Length: 170
Image 1 (tube, one colour):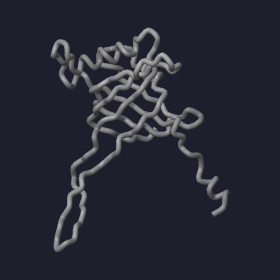
Image 2 (cartoon, rainbow, N blue to C red):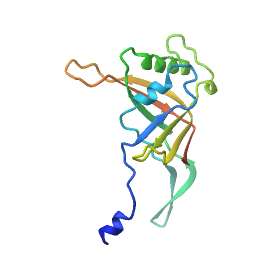
Image 3 (cartoon, one colour):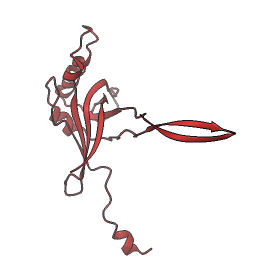
Image 4 (cartoon, helix red, strand yellow):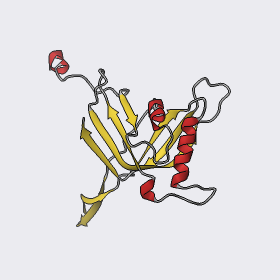
């Protein structure tokens, strides 16, 4: 195989070229765009998994796939916290609408869901694919530890659950 053939395969999709967005915003308000722009770390698309069951006959094991998804249906986003903490307050308000542990109240499930997009882009910032998490909502959030020796910004991690994941053409 020649280098011309390898080079002719085209450009690689770079792992550091993606955008996170919330096209519907947060149901409870807050600046979802600010949080999306601050998502500057890693993003992992959950493994897509179908269930497997086994059939045993005369010492032979045959694994077959079923028609049940075993995908965890969870993902995380991480962002740098702004100096005025507006982004964290938006997350707290959103998570408290899902369930407020102080008051023991929650909005109806359908009122707390939104869409989260991961859009891989090329070096010209053109969207190449759209990974759509439909009916997502936060289920947990946390902050990185405060550290007197660090110069990095404080970060907030949000754990999400979702109903459907769709890969769409841009």
